Length: 79
Image 1: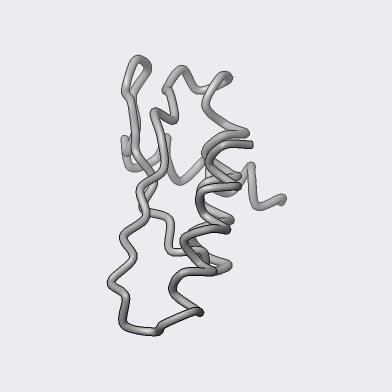
Image 2: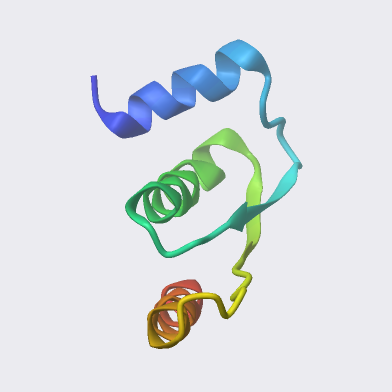
C-alpha cells in the first residue's frame, strides 16, 4: 500500500478531515512535515478538504540553519 493510500485510509478511519474542512499544515522544513504537506495536497481534491496553507515559525535558535529552513518552507509553500 502506498503512503498516499495509507494516509487516506487513516484520515477516513479516524474521521480526521471531513469534506469542506480547511487545514493548515505546520511546516518545519524537516522530512516528516514536508511529507505531510505533500500527502495532504495530493489527497485534498479527492477527499473534499482544502490545504489552506502552511505555517512555519522561525524561532531563530539555530542561526543561519533556521533562516535556511524558513526560506525552504517559503519556497515550498509558494510552489
